[in-house]
Length: 316
Image (tube, rainbow, N blue to C red; front, side, top):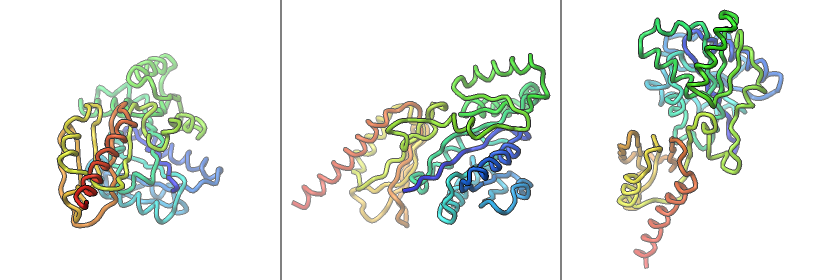
């Protein structure tokens, strides 16, 4: 099964995300790679669409943010790009007020997670804006920090607008916030794909299972069920999950209800599930930090095996 790479382009309002996207698309064209773009704008119209042109497959998400109000729409548009165009890579340009982890969460829909590999979160930092950030309200100041903290690759952009001394000071501040990100000083968001790709994660044998991991410390896994699980056992297992698993979402089937697929959601240690009228792929997506992937997979397989043995014993 071909997996499509996804790169998320983030950063605060006016930092240079669209300029970065334009630069990337020029390089991708030279490499003859099939590229698609998904643009998210809070307003009713995307000026960036006109800039990118009509030769590249493109989807727009307007009047909201994929962090929150447009999560479901993002799933539909990503699936559409996958099915219609089979690109090698999809670049998602987020709004200037998007939180990286919320965008990541939105991308990892259980419906499409098996078909995608999120390679990196690339954020553009406007150095002048960073210096003047205390002019913003506290919520926006926090967002600026979060956009830096949860990125794999950081472009410290508009470096020509600050002095060498200021550049050095800002770099130290940003490294303190995110010591594992790869950092480049840029003007007009000029950076090579080699530089960006160098920040991609390399996770050995578990590479397909891990997405945003090496630099972000955020780990994801998609588990595809072959059968069902016993609800009581699954509920007990959920209660004992470690605190470093932040989010679970997806679909599964319980042994005592073979008619319905159940939607399952888990966040802030609060789980809930309810039956669906339609049948969905039985996938669960896990998002967390430094959890034991092999152990998690084994425990889920054991739950499936227990349900299978119960059915076999009943038939005998």
